[in-house]
Image: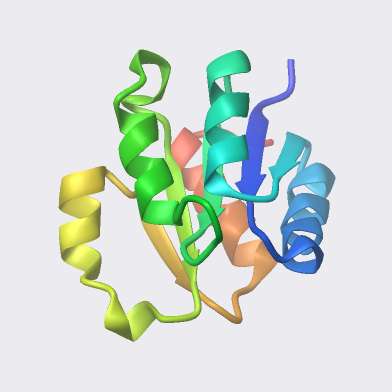
Length: 125
């Protein structure tokens, strides 16, 4: 059974780049255009990892991470945050308070995200 990844980004082109990399690595992927849609999907389906952009309309990436951590199925789910404003975020605080496992600053390497996810999940996909 394939591992499932949820990719959340309002920039569909960037979401598709991440999706392509994860698909090639053997993941089953789904894309959501904002945090609210992602939260609805997470309540309907079980994902093994969530990769989310920070700045999005409706619900930000950190708001999504906070909401996911309140769901029993996502207490330990790896969460990766993508941001164009990495230096403006309090990264250690985000990791501690929201349990964000990794933060990637844009532009990012899709291969680096795939490698981080593999390491977090402890698998060779």
